Length: 230
Image 1 (tube, rainbow, N blue to C red):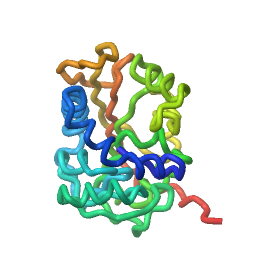
Image 2: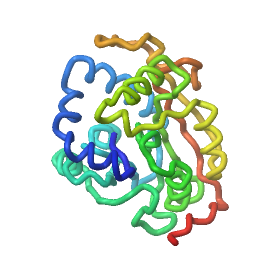
Image 3: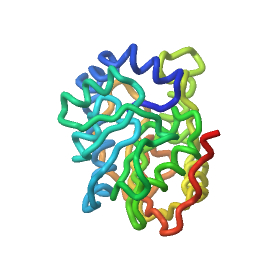
Image 4: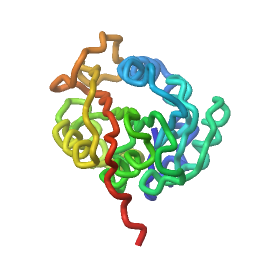
């Protein structure tokens, strides 16, 4: 829900209450339930402790039963703490945790805001134990929802202007380059973007044109080297 990118972090800090409140509106509630419905089967059964990178106000972490939420936006983390999430302030590209500390790690609606998505996934691989599960939730650029958000960003939207949306193929390449092996995926938002979205079934697989796709990936035993801190 939030991001390690410094410009975006400032936007999420300034807009934390407004951004979080959107999920209480009618459209926000529908979209949130659809996205959680796609993510939950991929998180289920994973070993703890479980971390969300880019946890923002903690809505996804709380709904998915994740233990720890990390973000750079301090105002958003105050909201996450109020939801019972243990919070840590930090960047996804430089996680303040030892190698192999987590059994599962979620990155939801965050890679598009990262200054270094590849570095974030490399860090995820480092802090996951071998065989641990990474769950990534994305809005693909090659969907009507992704194109809509991208256009809004180019028009100056206070949040989306900091995002760089990626296609499904680009997400798969990033995961493979970080050493992850895909083990499952779920899709939703096959409907057209609307101010009044409606409930729909979550589909197995990464459906072409889906506005939200959740990937489950396994951490390999041989981790890629940590990114340089120089």
